[in-house]
Image 1 (cartoon, rainbow, N blue to C red):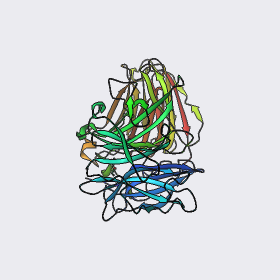
Image 2 (image 1 turned 90 degrees about the horizontal axis):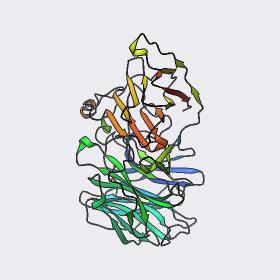
Image 3 (image 1 turned 30 degrees about the vertical axis):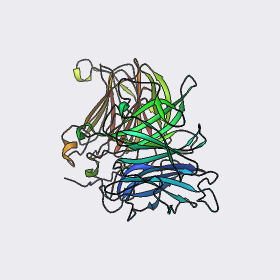
Image 4 (image 1 turned 120 degrees about the vertical axis):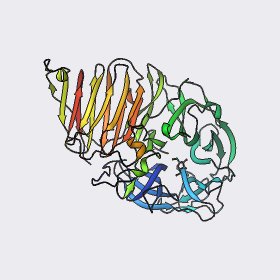
Length: 468
Ligand code: FRU
């Protein structure tokens, strides 16, 4: 049911491949001013297929230079599924000749089993698969997405892997020989479904203590639930992870349907997260032309205290801009539709940020000449709602058109006044509330650019225009 676009939806400041299909971000490594991003990629069509790794680099995390395909499917071992990368400081692997190599670890997936392999590069462009692959052989069908990190407790490398309904940890001195050290479990996998794309890292809590965060993407067996990410807060003892700050409800990373398989950068001075900004459920039918799939903005992670306890917070790395306040429109009491305080501002283009600072419930509407509207609101019940049911083209996919994925609702984490930041780039809207602890990422396809932002409710509206 694919209808291709008569508009160019290519985002100006988010990564998307030049052509073909992209899903998960892989091998996120920072080195000497360069951000490396590899992506799950199928070059021959705009749907999922035999997986490659495509490679791009950036100096600002907003504009990307394509470096082509870094890893191709292997005739014997299979497709190149998701994985991660490190700079092998001190050449522990012995795979560098002239300098410390970049080593990437990924899953080789054939129809029956998934095993872990590595490849290395000295010029950071050409990657050589290790001759002794796989380095973690296995027979299982769901055993994938290695995320390698320095193990500060044992002073070696560690990797966390998704294995069906749980996670496994392995340690190594040289990135080649791996020994299993622990598991974190099925019993705590509150969301259910197959686990994918884990990440594990420490962050400082507001009280100064160190808390380890385990990220998990959960492919739900039920397509109507969409695919979701959750996170756990706890400690890593060098061998395994355990929860020390429990929650009776899953901690959802992003309540939009279009943020999955998100993982963080290795070697950066901040903890930066990038996700695949599309849902496998309807994404491949999207009305983009030569490409399909894009990444979220990189988001700096921190831990903050909210009225609902300690939460992971995200702040996007967005293009530079200044915020200017929109003029308020006097309420007109004789017309009930206009009796609420309002503010309005014209939007010139497809790349902007809108900020609302409200005392209580409000609705923010982005609208275009065709009468299409994206509504973002805080309800009387203190819920944040992102409603894309009339935001643009929908009939490219029956499930998307059905409205099942149109209205997204989540409880606020704080009481009282609320600030909401909305970042928009052509086909993606990223919404951050309650200091970045409540996040929604959604794709949408307005048939014409939005030209107006309107705030209904007591508060202030700001616009920040950005350069692409
Ligand atoms: C997540 C995922 C990973 C896998 C990859 C294959 O979207 O299913 O678990 O490695 O995509 O493309």
